[in-house]
Amino acid sequence: MSLNTNYTKIITDEDFMETAQHGSNSYPFCFYNENLSFFDFNCIDWHWHTELEFVYIESGTVTVWVGEKQFDLTEGNGIFINSKVLHRFYSPSDAHIPNFVFMPSFIAADDSFIYQKYVLPIISSALSFQIFHKEILWQAKALSVMREIITAQESISSKELMTASRLQNLWLVLFENIDIPYPEEHKDHSSASQARLQLMMQFIHLNYSQDISLEDIARHVMVSKSTALNLFRKYLHTTPVNYLINYRLKQAARLLSKTEKKIHTISCETGFHNVDYFCRLFKKHYHLTPTEYRKYRT
Image (cartoon, rainbow, N blue to C red; front, side, top):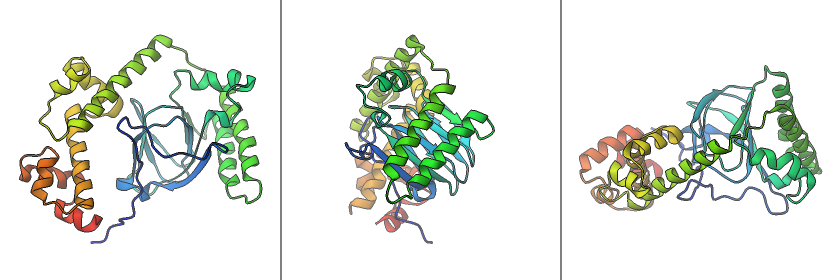
């Protein structure tokens, strides 16, 4: 049995903020010519960043989660994801998704009139994302400009200037064709909900090796068990207990690949006090036994 062990992973902090810097202070733009098959389990897992992001589906079908929304994007379509929005990508097979991320100030300086009039209204709005379908005229135009930006990355001498000019064009298409939502009450509620969710996730990350329950997780942010369930289902499409179990398994996988600790020890250190139960869950999640996983990932 052969496995590709050179997987790419998104690295985040405990609040799911991506830790990698995209671009530089002098050129806050970065292009990624990615294929989901090169990621662990064909998945770019939950993360968010302050940068804006545009993703083009060059081939394959991609399941996208943005906040509480889930949908499929097919070849030739794309998506814009706003700043500080949780998102995730998955494909059951190869999916080529060239994408670019950039700071809002790359469009215009944040103390400029252009930024205040054309950039800030979108990034401070309740707009989480915008899908681009090739069958809709203005969205097809946006997709065409996205492809121009992608192609510009192949230029040797002038790609930075080409990228900047086309990105302003892309932003103009977006700005002129969307209805910018301003439901402030809903936005504040959503921000508070996501803050509670992130605090509960942080509590799990810090205490996963202990015997913690749904009640413990909910009590940490002073909400009811039903509210905790609803927040996890809405934003992460899972339950707090399932999230806890999956996080324990992820930490166990890390220990298997990075240490020589015995499986029984790893089971106990990650909150599984029955090694047989741990092994069954691990195989169900990773489709490999702990021993097989250690063999192929080290």
